[in-house]
Image (cartoon, rainbow, N blue to C red):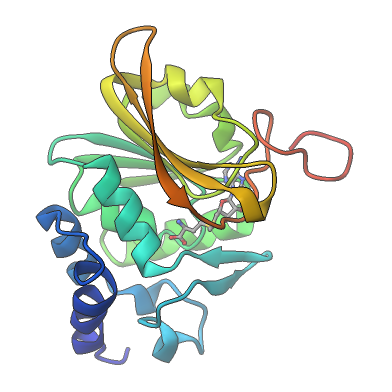
Amino acid sequence: MLDLSRARDRMVDMQIARRGINDPHTLEAMRRVPREAFVEAGFEEFAYEDSPLPIGEGQTISQPYIVAHMIAAAAIKPGETVLDVGTGSGYAAAVASQIADRVYTIERHPPLAEAAGRRLHELGYDNVEVRVGDGTKGWPEAAPFDVILVAAGGPEVPRALKEQLVTGGRLVIPVGLDETSQRLLKLTRTSQSDYETEDLGAVMFVPLIGEQGWSDGSGNLA
Ligand code: SAM
């Protein structure tokens, strides 16, 4: 594998810290995880560019800045448990795993979930568990979560995800009626029945497909 550690440090300095993300846990985690190990073969030299990259199945590994933005906004702390919806390559789960105690990550495309699971295991991210399934339903057996990160955009916030947050827990999710009108929302569960919502700005994510997201286009819910 190429040694891209200097490119990685430069990415953190120029694309993340310089854009105002100063949470030390996030910056340190982004400096540790080798994004080149999560991109498709042949794309390693582009791993630290300021953009998403293809990972197969029509999906993408998110832009480094957006991964850092979501993790910093969720303010993941040591000792916490995280649910990551939309494993994709496994990169965001790996970054979160450098701060959290345990990360559960769920992906609807079996080939992506299998590749991410293998990659995370080979790289030694032993506090990450990968599952194939519909993440709009959460992961009831592992709930509740301190933080839920959703890397795909749906028409509304899935009820199951809200219910699987601890009181004080944070859910960061893109919501919008199409890809061009998505807003990144942060919900904080302030009591058993109350949530505070903060709008973190415009974003563009692939669709969240599932029972509490978009239909898969086949007429059946995924
Ligand atoms: N965070 C990922 C990474 O670091 O590579 C990138 C995620 S990619 C932008 C979004 C992923 O969400 C895709 O792999 C897509 O298949 C997945 N996805 C969409 N709807 C889903 C659902 N209901 N449950 C689980 N995964 C879903």
